[in-house]
Image (tube, rainbow, N blue to C red):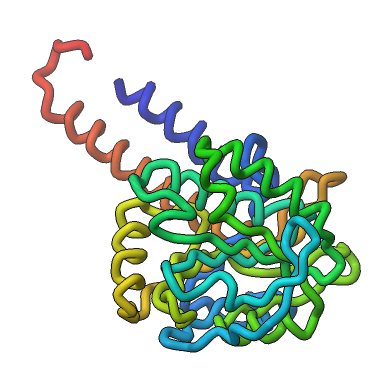
Length: 285
């Protein structure tokens, strides 16, 4: 038994110590947890984040274009129901898809339906995105949702830079454009707004507990403003497909995970060795 435990430990430790290639893992960027030394964070990411501006009023006079190409103002989507806001860009190769997948996964589980108990605004922060791209995204996610009637309550918008900036500033969404990769660097979260357009709740990451989202919608519908939550930011950051490597941000997290794995394995070996020592002589495992 001891020999098997040691072989297993060596194999897992070796896997944990090789974080530079993560086959089978989605290209979803990297984590930076609160307290990470600034010296270990790429300069670009220091300008990226999602600040919790609870109670902040979204400017409802901002103008955008909906998926049909119609000019709209945000006020058209407020007044009756709480709103789930997702800020993405439609040609994002990594994290935005995970955000929308997480949102639709939560929506599918809830007994609330978009367009009835709440509305959803998915707004691109890339001013080059078009209504045609928005139409494609909407078709994809209404199909994933499996509730065709939700099309009346889930809106995919595009807009000019001034409107995008006004909305992003109001909800604390900070992002930058990385020219070498021709991609936006941003963090992930969904936000719940009251029917009056005030920020009520933030849900960070790419998976959102349906029960918590439902409760957030109920509170927002009453105009309640939630409390700050702990942040574990997931960033959409560079992936090099030619090298099969991820950015240093996610590498640091994987190294920490590798260390934790080795600690657990070490404890397992210690238990096995202790059991072997306690066995009477002549007894074979």
